[in-house]
Length: 416
Ligand code: NAD
Image 1: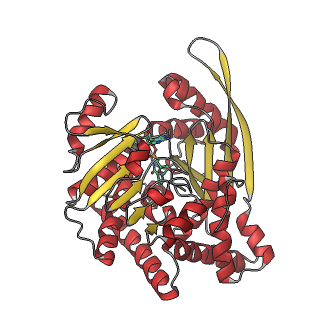
Image 2: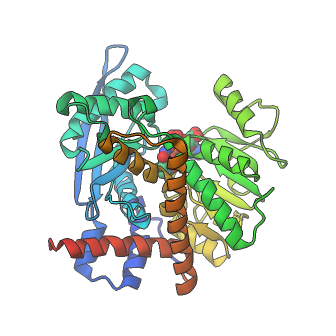
């Protein structure tokens, strides 16, 4: 079994990459080129705080690979978003955009900050400074940021404005913007919608009756809250949800819209009448049909993998399962649908937003959702077929497809 205690998160993702590269028979040089980021930039982000003091945060943008098109990837504001984590997330974007066959490469950005501790005006100043410091890497044909953990459509509006002050009005420079600023209908819900769509498909393929199936969702931000809401609308029972503070459980199913209203009014889950309090580790170990980690990385490790009871795990967060835990779960017969497939809905609708911006034309929401469904199902069926034909896991199949496409693009470009 893989021992990953000494490895960084980027090394961990590369174990999945190496596994695919071995099976594809890639030679050492090409493997090295695909594994390492093509370009990395570290920046300092000084911010004048509301009390007049200056605080300096660390930021980065990692451009992992652009063989298939401009770099594409979110910006994360989180205290642990260091270079190694951003590298890992950037590489996942490369394999993800290739897997869902979008004309993009992979990138990621990060600022090591807890956005919950900053005021809106401090966040505005931080975002502008960060954008100015990486601006020479960006552009609609170069590198297109989007929201990730700790950032949202407001952050993207600030980024677009800061970029536009130097280059003129350029909505296609970032995606995940507010609809009023050239954002796409359906972008906000896209990642969660993709998760909900694939849940229906996987249930069919695994002979699980989705009506009334028990689903547990960790994380109640953009991805987790939309996934929970749409999964419930499709007839499943969302029996548990959580955020960083802990979670709520109700065996009969939580009323997600009411819970959302309650959370907006009170700022948290606790005290909600329709559920009992549980911890994040209890949520992960619940008796349920589908477990959806939708918060942060490395939440399922060799420590708790043996206690996971769900027969199906859908990785809505990026890298929620360590390679060691992945082996333990797979050996135990758990089906895992990997991050690069499950959470690709966000980048798919980001792609639609970018194309709408370039054409200065807007799609209706129904068109966005229909096209999203087509792309997600196509990728899902390719993964499912490859996994059953080659008798490999869904993660192995997903990485194989993604890595093969990027390797082919490098070959066709002929630049080495
Ligand atoms: P978000 O900031 O909107 O929400 C994060 C949620 O996770 C919050 O509810 C937070 O309370 C919770 N959380 C944070 N730390 C936690 C912890 N230690 N334990 C339990 N819960 C914790 O972020 P998001 O945009 O929903 O992203 C969630 C995950 O999905 C990330 O891994 C992100 O990379 C991935 N993702 C997001 C998108 C997108 O479109 N936003 C697309 C693809 C993948």
